[in-house]
Amino acid sequence: MQSSSGPTISPTAGHGYMNNRKNRLYSNPFFDMASEQMPKDIKSFFKHCELVYVNSPIIMNGIAKLVTYPIRDFKYKTTSKKKREKTKEYIEGKLDLKSHLIQVATERYIYGNVYRSMYFPFHRFLKCESCKQQTNIKEADFKVKKDKFILNCRCGYRGNSEVEDKDTQDLSRLRIVNWDPHAITLQSNPITGQVRYYYDIPSSIKLGATRGDRVIVEDLPKVFFDASVKNKKVEFGDNFYHLKCTSLSGYSTGYGLSPLISVLKLFHYKATLRKSAEAIAHEHITPKNILYPQGTTSDPSVSSNLRKWKEEITKGVERWRYDPGAMMTAPYPTGVSNVGSQGRGLLPTNEIKEARNEMLLSLSIPPDLVYNPSGIQKSTVALAMMENQLKPLKSELEEYANWIIDMLNAKYDLDLCDVELQEFSLTDDNQNKQFLMQGAQKGGVSSTTVMESMGLDPHEERENQKKEQIQQYEMQKDLEHRMREIDQNVSQQTSDEQAAMEDGTIPQYNQQKLLAKASQMAQQLIQVPYEQRRSYMSQLQNEDAVMHALVSQQLSNLHDQGHGPGGDQ
Image 1 (tube, rainbow, N blue to C red):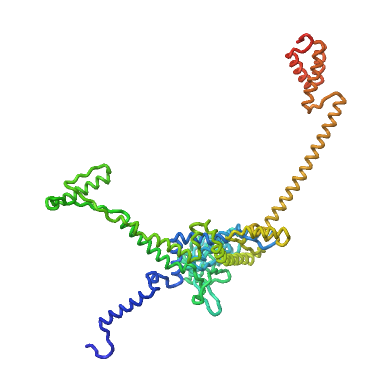
Image 2 (image 1 turned 120 degrees about the vertical axis):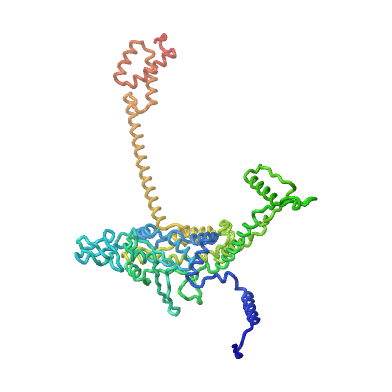
């Protein structure tokens, strides 16, 4: 029995209520399909950002160009050559920090949050409770049962063993840990600004730790192993760095606000356009031909069997597709209609292009940076805005790089120096460089400032100048030594020639004078009788065989020319 007291809602009233609610929703300009797909929590937001980055080549390309430009070579803030070389060995050799900074800057644009730690290598040993001998875990026979290491020792003992980790100076395994943003949970106090970080260990590591997989347990830090087998989270300490984008006061949860937050609705809109374009392509791009019997004075549908006509036409089309030269026959005229070839005019190409440009502008990336990098140099204002946008990123990366150096100094008692990234400029600053060079010539600007403005390392340039000066000095000394040797040889040659002229001999090394002397002697001998000439030639052969050969050759030439008394042969 229905009560007569209390308010009641009639079906008509309910229908009107729902209509009014829908009208209020659709009259709201911020209510759309994309709003229904927006993430409800920060971890879902990370997944949407990954989706945008992976499925939008224009965003991936734009971010790649934006983050790589300010990351130049390192400047080492020290005057000690030894300290600079040692820092360079760790930063550029062992850690390859420049490539790592590019990855950090990329994740900063995608997630708005970057989590990093240092992994310091160690050797893990299992200590036998019976013989107290320590065995490297890589060589030990063990199993993991719950949170205990069951060791089969060489002494015959089988049971629990104590785990001891010892630091190693072998830094070949030193690396930077890239933490998954999905696995990091923050607990922040918006009043004090204090933040605690917790790591939710992935199930694959937990399973490997409980099973005792060597790949996991041999190098997994003890605190992570204990948390894995006990199914707990790990709270980070000092060995943790959180690089994040700026956020709003209303988002004071400890997380950074990703720049991609303004792209999500645009990406959803572009995805809707592409989906519609795909449907249009399937439906309207490929034309469809329809064959039908064309009516004449006598209606073919009345006088003919249309089922038989359809079978014959279908077979003819199949033969034509297999052999384009095949001929089809029809008992009466057949018409053709074309359907679905108007797809090109329906495609939302311009709308998709406009959505892509809006996505770039929402990230403060000029479209010319992606489409026409050379054309962006014409816009001085756009370049100046990009410089102001990238300089804070450069400062954040330098602070992070120096945190890594501080961690290495504290862990291994090193004395590495701080570093900076070389200055960059998107605008054409040739005029500024000329002013700096003129100031350096007048003594108003240091050479260090000039070289840094050109992207050069002042310390390396000064070392190169020293090497060049030493090489020039060595070349000058070698040239002086060679010139002294030549002067000595010329002086010796002159004295030898003078002595030869006094003795009536010719130095052996002067070929021209030897030939001239031989020609002169041949001219004299050609005038004497043959027997006297023969006697003189025999004596010359015993004294100087070279001169004898030259004179004989000259005499032969004179005989051929018909010289001598009576043509004597």
